[in-house]
Length: 451
Image 1 (cartoon, rainbow, N blue to C red):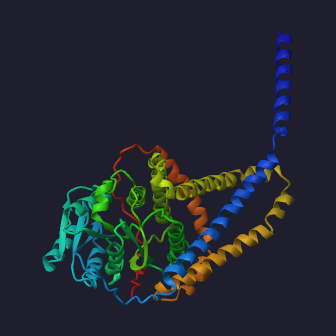
Image 2 (image 1 turned 135 degrees about the vertical axis):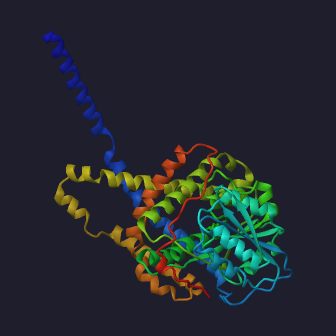
Image 3 (image 1 turned 180 degrees about the horizontal axis):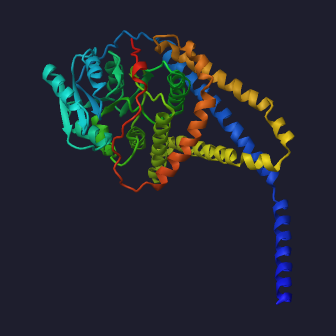
């Protein structure tokens, strides 16, 4: 028995030595360096890609046409337009939303408000407004069916070929419909137009950062994506559609948690174009709590992963070739978030194994961190200077607040990207995406900022 135990002990010891030699022989240092380069260079390179593309779009589309936000473009024709407003528990906002719509500088439009099983007084307010204004029609769904079903129901009941869709808390600029319609009338290949959302609530730190984010990040990326060919998603809060294009692709998908991302890919994979209309302004409410922000960004991330999973097989045809850069960039972005999160989780182990003094040295400013910081500030400066023309108040006043974006939002977006990925993978195919109560900001701070 003792000899058998000694033999087993000798064998285990030899195996441990073999494993240790193999681990030491592996190029861990090279792998660690490659990971570090990826984590550093990916956001750096993408920042310059977005800046170059956004600047090209600005000089091609906006430079010679200064924003005249009070003007309405002249159109060769003014066809009927249906404005669709899906509502779920919008009793506090819907009256203001519709009152703004009634002042549209467009001669021929109707308003279709969809009450999707609201539990508050939304339906009563809508019925009251419909009785006062003949332009307003109300569609009542008895139970919560989800935004996609609400939009599809209203689209099928609409009397128009052109549909403008906004959220129940959005305030649409008076000339937005005309600005979006001009794309449909000038190009029969346009299937949808994405508008230019602005942030209404900007009194808290999160609100102010989001004002800068929608200019420096969202607006810049949309411009760049249009310069390079296709956009990842329309703005779900303000977009216009050609009804025949929607009919061709089967309208919105009721089982996709972000119907705006899904319909964008459906239309573009079918060959339809989606331009970005910067003059189509729409003021919206955004979350102003960390919990609300986490839920919103997790939903966005989950919707993006759902689209990547569903339409992968559709990319293998000639018409889908322009969508490949978007698809690859999204995959790399998700991989970057997973990598950064893994490094954060492994950081305590790294501190424990390494020399603490060496770790303190790593925390000191280096040329890489300085370059990344300067690039962030340059991106914010370029994008805010482009986007300032669409702000009633100078976009420069939010430059101070946007410098906090990498500290607050990068960490949140990394976490929500991973959380959204897990939810998308675990979600059952065909599961209905229904409304949830969203954080619309602090009520006392939800001041209207519009022209």
